[in-house]
Image (cartoon, rainbow, N blue to C red):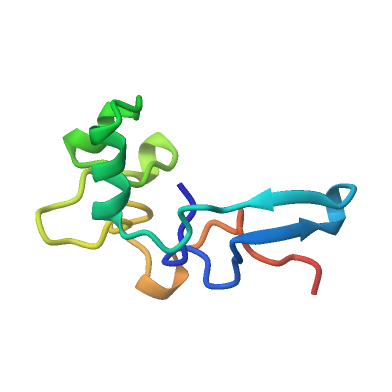
Length: 96
């Protein structure tokens, strides 16, 4: 689930020039976690049950742990790293 909190450069509609001008739609970009999960549950949309076990952000097995109540949703990813270094690079602009 891609949201503005994880990538500040996203727009609701994007043209991806690197993939043959593919149009990318991000309709829930500005939704909160609570809005997103509320919609999922109200509409009986399947989701990864690891979320219910404290894993709202999943990485590789050795790099991910369950978060504690009140922690940031991404606190379980690369938990030993500095807060500012937690972006894996998947959603970064590598063209620069």
